[in-house]
Image (cartoon, rainbow, N blue to C red; front, side, top):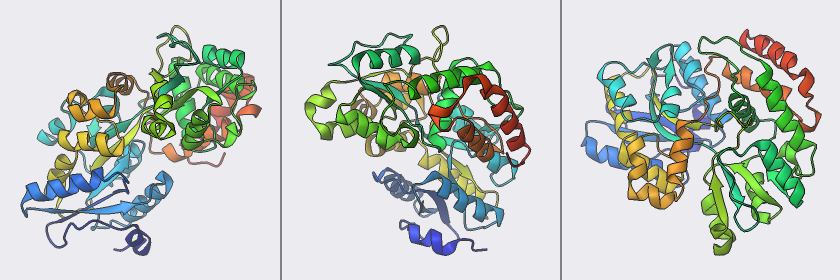
Length: 403
């Protein structure tokens, strides 16, 4: 069954061979060469037992999901391994499209993994993938212009300081997944959640607290130009332009700072994600890629073996070095590769461990859209009415209704 074959073929694939031992791994096109290196190494180690074929999907997460879902819904046997965004687990597992990791396989998938990434492969007490790469956001600041933020530094304090200094705070507030990421972390940082482990909608005053932070920044002089249309790269560019003393963003901004100039990177500090409330620890965002085995693969045992190889400690270290993708296995943070790539490796590990996963639900796509519509545009958000509005939209989204 060939679904969207022309589209996927245009994305390209590495030389992995074909036939009875070919294992097709569908995952985004990682530009640093880390995934290519993992595929080549695993194929050498397999010594002909299997050959992984790296099928490169678009870099846009929505396009990746659409292509994967279309193939799996058609029970396409040509897909063996899925490079899954951390938010896909529940949807693919509930549909019966990916296999659980059981027995010794589950032990391998869970071994030495950080708690945050491990939660992203769990659904209904089963494990549906092996964590490969992770990601989170840090608070980046100008050491030459502001004091080192204290451990209990809050969003309110950061916004107030930026206003006092006449600078901006860089965030991701476009109506897209990045806005969901921000709001989810603000809500979790206020002690709340959006959906509980049973899949029930849980919206309380923590949503109002998130709206207060978002609205305060959007309506203040510290709001960056184009805040309502800014994503990760616009935040990076704003920080590098000198218009801001603070930004929340992923680790890719650190090597990018080197291109601005040695002095700029030298004056770039890092701290844990800001707190929503003073008395609650922050809950940083959590991203990454897990590897799942398709239920329709006609060689699942080989696919599990290939997945274990791709996600091993060596290849996590390579992904960190070449791709700027943080590891999911705790011990990898002690390697020279990771320490060299991330002088902030300890903070990165701490942040991933403490991160807040996004809602685990088969209806995630609709849930995320409900959040985006409720909290956008930032300057029009009314904290006083947000709880009822979000709850209503979330309940409709969970039921598959139009909101």
